[in-house]
Length: 140
Image 1 (cartoon, helix red, strand yellow):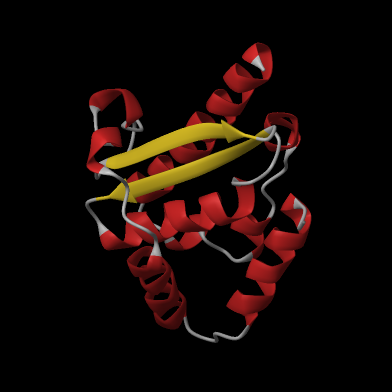
Image 2 (cartoon, rainbow, N blue to C red):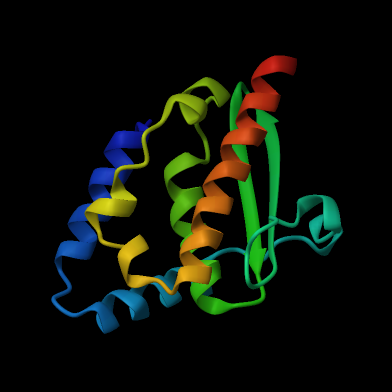
């Protein structure tokens, strides 16, 4: 089982293949396109992430002490961003998610290459994921 840091390091290596930010954007969009669609039953207001310019739904379930995240968005770049976060944090324990330092975001230059509203949305996604993990920690 890969740790959060193992997965972050894989992502950093993947992004090092690209010299231009346009290529990195294309890669993020491709990740969004490959993200499994979220079941419509989970696309409700309780699962919307506040603070995002586009609509982003995030659903979490506990399975064998691990949090499984699924998500969707109505914008391809945002869907790619949430796909990256899910890749790093899904299938980890709530405790590991809560304590994680998401250094890959800065190391790949993601925040600095997003528009201010998308950058704020990224922060909102991380806050929501950690809040879900903190909540699950209390009840499991």
